[in-house]
Length: 488
Image (cartoon, rainbow, N blue to C red; front, side, top):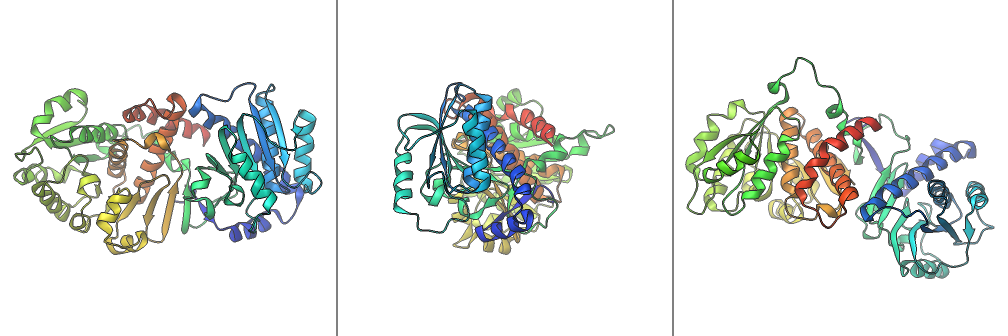
């Protein structure tokens, strides 16, 4: 997916990359440092909306090291002060002021002239901490006095703790880590990094898609563009959804409602026949097909003909949300997967070892960690993908999309998604997107994950992380798509 993702680099690779990019020229490094600092400030202010916004007279603590990370943090603090002149900016120099490198010294002079205050130690309550002590040049172990400084700061009350590029020495406990220019491997999945935000500074353009990658909102660009004037509903695909049971009726409805928001032309849903009247009243845009039920309320084998006779019309098939684990229903799912001529999204209870390996159709699997353990039989993620030829969306705090030699990471979304139903919405979204690009399962998966995550971020900024329902995410799909188009 050219231009839709950027490489994740080791610290050594980052060192080589930056040496080649800047050639040790401070005239090149200073504009990049300014862009980084301002991007951090914008991102911090945006993320503060998840906890009510940054107060006009907020108190900010900057932990500054000698080099570029310290300079980034100081510039970010100055940008915050520009936005909130009444804010108080306090700076603790981890190594003192004298060892500051020229660009960090320049950043400090500008902040000091604007009202930044140097302090010897942090004390009291702060709104924000910006950790800019160490970057990727750090070599452990940290000096005892730095360990003590970070420990003391970790013990203070902050509403938000932000690390610049990397949490210093792996000791700083961040709520967010703002990866400037590129993402470094040590923060991927690191608990001390909190939530990672990749701040694209324009360093990468059109590089090869190999190895570990970070997804960017540009993957949504085609969805945000004008549609052809002569298109009709058949132009945008037809997704079939096989889902639901009497025990789990909500999952099917959530998946269908999400598919309807994906831009797909047509949605046909096969659900237990007793649920059709209620579902059709809630989502009349879908075509609802009642399926014979087992005594326990699952989908019965005898209904297979309902799908088989219609499947020629589909461009993708989503199976799984809310199906339950009745043996008869799982046997039905395995038979469908084996015969399906169209690409599949396999989710939730349909993620069974015999199901995910059945048939030859392209497929996207959407497990969380527990479901992956169930289907992988001890294989690593990459080995499993190599064996099954599937595209796997491994859901988690950092969702990974694996296809062959490439692993894409999505840092969008957050704790607001840690509630029942978020996976059903993602499955519906990917199903609808796959129906529009049936030969591109990786692209459909990446678009679904990024779109879902961006909408979750927007939901949290609007309403917070706690007192929300996961279906509210649907109302943010359109706004974030338009916002991503504007940013492009």
